[in-house]
Image 1 (cartoon, helix red, strand yellow):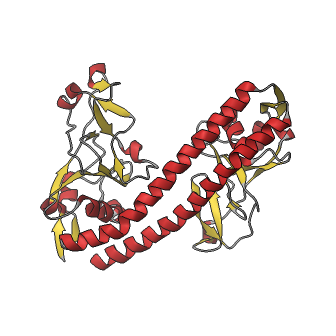
Image 2: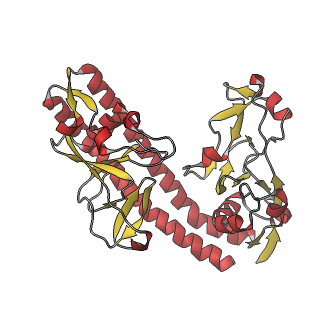
Image 3: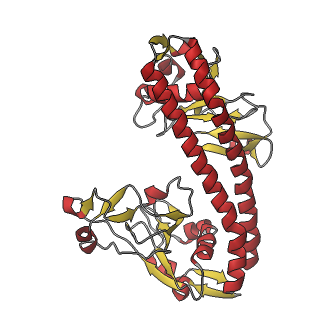
Length: 364
């Protein structure tokens, strides 16, 4: 085992942003992939090939952005610190990264990736700055990590990569199935005779409950908040059957999601729906998304969506309940697969965390 500075096992490279004053610096033809920290927010894959925006060669040459080779480890160095991905192809980043081009004779890209995702808190602790914290190029170059032999690195990677790939595959399957459900819903709505009713005719709308941080734990029932699963609690469940939720506070107010699980705790950052007419989870989810609850969000400094405001929502549904019943029948198998994959991913994620702690704590 050898301890190396990052500069000894790779080249640290920053990024840049072409001036937005010049349209010719940016491309709609997917010229050069240009990654920002925002592109990695919520990004769950190991590799990344493109973000939301692209730049041109002229934009690249007239900025501090640089072309990074395939297998470069992208590490966000500010706002926020510690997002990590591997470049799947040549690409560039903005200045929010301190990326590492690994010396493959000393360290494998995948091993460096796994190493750096375990170093998030350490990077945050050594970041400097008064306005916002940032890991400088100098700090990144001097950051030390433990590097075993290439043979040992391969053994560790061979344990972790199958888990990561299975998680990604399950996510891809779920995305595909969700798209199919969406297409079926759009077809249903466009081909049916519709009637307008108030949301309260189909659903009871309720608030989640307040949960002090002291009541969060590592065991018990699952706790969901505005950002999804946030932990576990020994408190009594808020709802004992699957439901559709709507974020009620913060910048994500109006965001619709569904939780196909029983006995869960929902925080007071969420509204949840109780299906009074048995219209089904998939139908409810698609229906609420299409209605855009964001239109009822109030407040700019502290956005919120109240039950009173959401109760104003009138929705269009098929006049014939048999049509809705057919949609439920057609999509229930999709829901079961999606939920099975979600549950498997929770277990796989936990296994990955156990292995990361095992291997990389041993290295430290």
